[in-house]
Image (tube, rainbow, N blue to C red):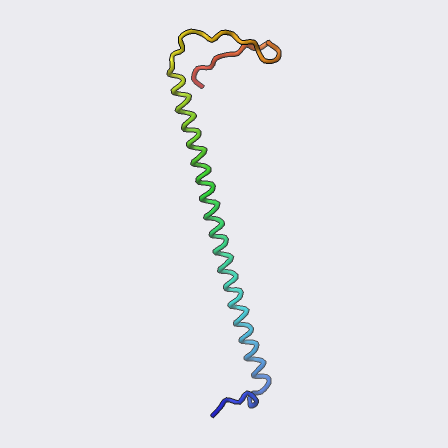
Length: 100
């Protein structure tokens, strides 16, 4: 016995078509939502990695500068620097700074 679509009423066909269309739309919305969540997660992960690495670089630069300044502060300088003329007005003498 074969199934004959001509024996199915039009209202039933419309109902089945509507249900199939609704299921297709639901699947599309669910897939789009999951993809949006995945993209947001990937973006957040990328931002976290970039900001963490930049923070680590800045921290490393600050730590290196700290070591350099403290190393320079321990060095004994035999004598004074000769005076240098000020670059513009000559009203402010240059000062050698010790430890900053």
